[in-house]
Image (tube, rainbow, N blue to C red; front, side, top):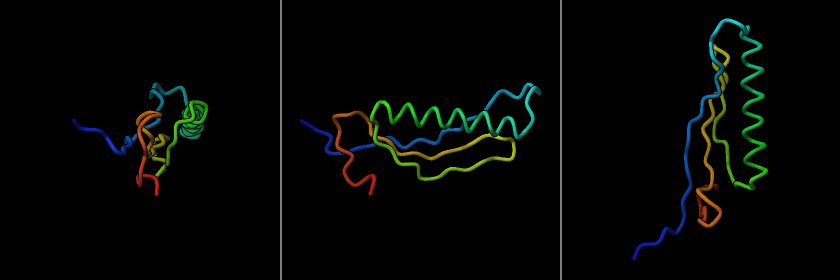
Length: 82
């Protein structure tokens, strides 16, 4: 029998609006930042443990993050967040 001792999910997420020409670059960046903030709030409300390793703003107004988060509430995260 196998059992997972510890684990986490590593993701790269791009927060980006549709480029339909209705938003300027600063407005797109603001909208993407707001979406990113809602994502973090959702993680905190669900009490999901996470760590953002990298966050960068792109010239097109998108925001890219690299994040480690717990797989589910039952799996130990071990040394992944140290």
